[in-house]
Image (cartoon, rainbow, N blue to C red; front, side):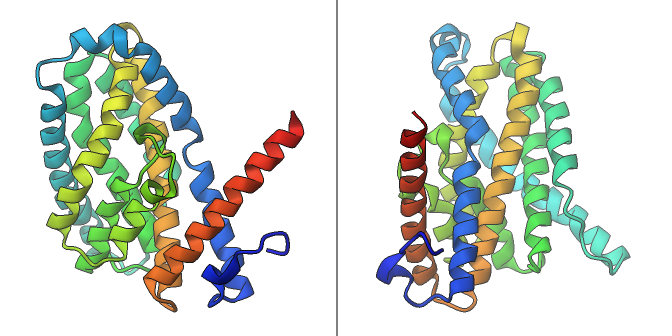
Length: 272
C-alpha cells in the first residue's frame, strides 16, 4: 500500500487490512474482463436478433429468473445440506467444475436458440448459486444461517459490465445487500431485475441458432467466472466487516477501488 494513500476513509484499518482490501479491489476490477467482450458482441448483434424475441420478452425473462432463483435456492442448499449431514468434512470449493458444468449446460441450451436458452437458465442459475455457496463455505460461513443464504443470493445483484457498471455504486450493490441482513425473499425481489438485465444482454449474443451452442457454452462459463469472483469479493468484505462497521468497510473499499482505477488508467496511458 506504500504507493496508495487511501486517505481518511481508511483511517480505521491496519496495514494488513488495507493490503487485503487492495487484493479484493483487484479481484473486483478483473472480474468482468470476459463479460466486457460479450457485452460488445451483444450490442453488435442486438439489431439482428431483436425481431426473433417473443412479445414481452423482458417480462417473461424476469419471471423465469425469479422462478430460477427460488428453485436454485431450494435445490442447491438441499444438496449441500445432505452432504454435510453424511460427512463432517468441509464442503470443497470446486470452481473449475462449476465453470465446466455451466459451459456444458450453455452448449445444450444454446443449440436450440431462444426457447432452449430460457429452459437452461434454471440449471445454470443453480450451478452458479451452488458455486457461490461453496465459496462462502470456504470463508467459514455457515450455509444453514439464513443471513448467509440471503448473501449468497445477493451476489447475483452485483453490478457488472453487462449492466453498464460504469460507477462504483452498482459495483458494490450486492455488497450492500450482503451486509444488510435482508431475508432471502426480500433479497430475491431486489436481485431479479439486476440479474435479469445482465442475462438479457448475454442471451442476445447466443440467440442466433448457428452460433447458439458455442456462444452458450462460452457465455455460461464467463457468467460463472464473474459471479465466482464477485462471491470472493463479497465474502472477503464480510470477513473484514466482522471487525469494523459495514459502512466503514464499504467506504474504504470505495476509496481503494477509485484509486485502483486511477492507477490502471495511468498505467494504460503510459503504455501508449
